[in-house]
Image (cartoon, rainbow, N blue to C red; front, side, top):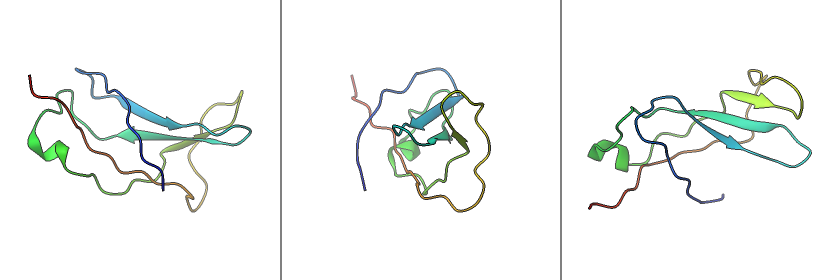
Length: 81
């Protein structure tokens, strides 16, 4: 298990998170967040999510074919101003 954080663009509902692996297939996840994810319900952990796409260097992303070896879950954490 790994933990980390990334900045999320505001005002867009089309967000992708990419797990990159050297010399392997990258895993691409669509984040299910609205354009304004400031509601309290997005501060809770999401369900575990399998990748929506896999991508090899120099190739177009494709749907995963079979069981996924990686899953993510996420939540929005922001500072009140």
